[in-house]
Length: 270
Image 1 (cartoon, one colour):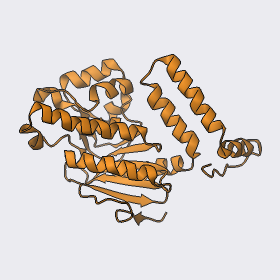
Image 2: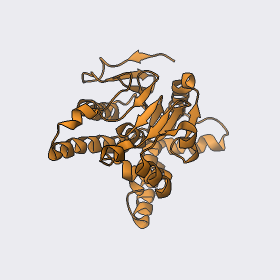
Image 3: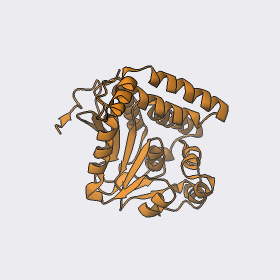
């Protein structure tokens, strides 16, 4: 697999992120080690980067991870928050929310490769991804209650949709960290692997996803993510429309023909 650093190829300057394009996947790293704290500038870069990756036809899947081996993202930079007035912090949280919603709307699947602590906003960031693989050393938590606040970028809502309300309330109310195995048990992560194998596993998943038909993947993500936010009848209508869009493609014809001929399909993205 050839590796090309595309930081210079995308139409923006990255200070707090790194983006490397490897064949048909983009590996995005939060670049504020050792704890990769989140701030408003980082969210601004991440938001703009999502636009760039959406427009990049070469990219079929995205991986988000943290630099170093201690943290994916250990939450928001509290020093940045302390002096802000309520209206200012609400405005900044709107930027976080918009960034996460942009990730959910991205037509390409996003994998969180959680290499260490994922706390507060860092845990919320993983919830905006489609899939989550974590290292055996990873820990997750929503410590906001211990700071006199609550999650403000989707944590109270996305968490309960992923793991259920009962387990979500336990994490949110107590504000305590849980280890990787517990995160797997409650369905917060899809897989737990040794730290040294984390990125390889994430890349293998991204490579498999990159081979899937583009329109079907786009429609699948839209149907799941948008359908979860509306009533069942509306979600079923959406699913049917997305099914129709996928069915109308040449890739659907190729997929079915390959199935009948008992061969691997060769999708062209059309």
